[in-house]
Amino acid sequence: MLPFIFSSQNTQMLDLKAAADRSNRSVDTIRRYIKAGRLPAVRDGRKLYVTADDLDKALSEDRGQLSNASDLKAWAQRMAAEAPPLKPEQIRILRSAFATVSNGDSGP
Image 1: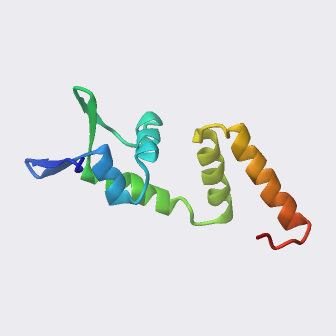
Image 2: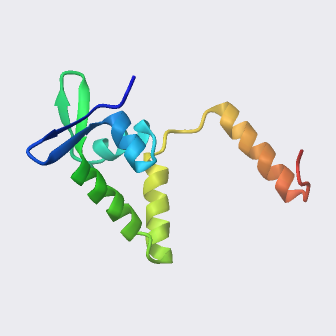
């Protein structure tokens, strides 16, 4: 399905797919921004829409927050808090990868 974009009185509205494409982020990340209150959205039936201006503002706030080490740490903590928990298989893969690196093996 193609992303949905429409304009009304100089306000460009994007569905979540179009917002994800525009921001180089996933639809799930756009949903997390909305759920966290970082990105306002409007519901029309089952679909959510955001304005291009609000999306650009949320993205610029992301970029502006990473100006120093303490901001980076705060950003990483927020992202970790918003991330879904790892599945057992993902944990196994990560443990294996870290074990390989810590043993000095360069891997496959």
